[in-house]
Image (cartoon, rainbow, N blue to C red; front, top):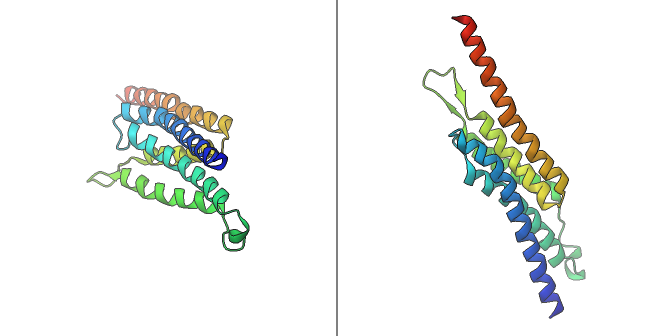
Length: 163
């Protein structure tokens, strides 16, 4: 009975970490949503949550198969988890990148990069590296909001001086 309760507590802990990662991803996704980008609030939340959940599932798998009977058969490599997340997010990111019909303007690259970033933030949250997850969220929002504002301001100044 004690093992069953501990298993439920562990699963609830993974679920809480997943929700926490989704909250962090949602902060970044909200910024993308407000700029009407192809991947917004929900997408960023789901990517961050999926990354954290995969880390949690890896922990659960290692606990479940750590017994003597499985020790020789099961090898868990956490780096493979990161590789799988990066590959999956690469497909999502590719779908957010568009080239207009003229071929000279490409859009969606920043959103693709933000999806990769929320996946990594989700992995950090899943590993309980909370300072890293929150700090990376703040840095990402700084890049998207502050540098975006600065870039628009310089573009407006350049357009004014060209007239």
